Amino acid sequence: MDTQATQNTEAIQKLLQALGATAVFGAPITQNGTTVIPVAHVTVGFGYGGGYGRGGEIGATAPDAANNSGEGGGSGGGAGGRSTPCGFIRITGDDVRYEPIADETRIPLAGIAMVAWIVFWIMATIRVIAKGVAKTQQMKWKLAQAEVDHAQHSGEKTK
Image: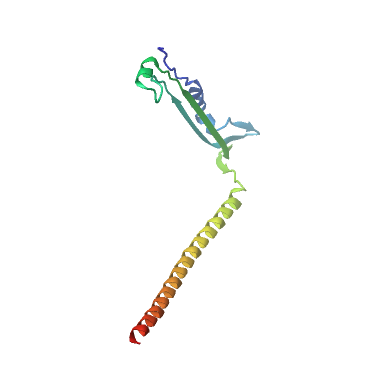
């Protein structure tokens, strides 16, 4: 079988054509002498794979391998993206300003993440200290037991 794998990159080509200034800056909107240009943060990722092979069956014995020519194939791809509004550019008369859009949910989420991080490290520190205290107590107990055993053993020899 003399088949070649062909790459289908049409989707990737369309994605690359769509990326550009229009992906970040929206179409300007003009009303009452004021022009507004929306601004967004665009993240895109994609991957593509392919392959073709020719070989025998895995684990085939020598006589079977001569009769088994094998085949191959494969392909794959994927893409994803995200667009998040960041703000807008306002143009009025002789004034140009960028006005960001504040994401109200980020501040509480950052606070929750910070508290979780602090609790994690406090608990990790307490655990390390507790292990150290337990090991010290265990060593003191073993030392005291060894002294008692030594005293008993020394007392038996002197009798």
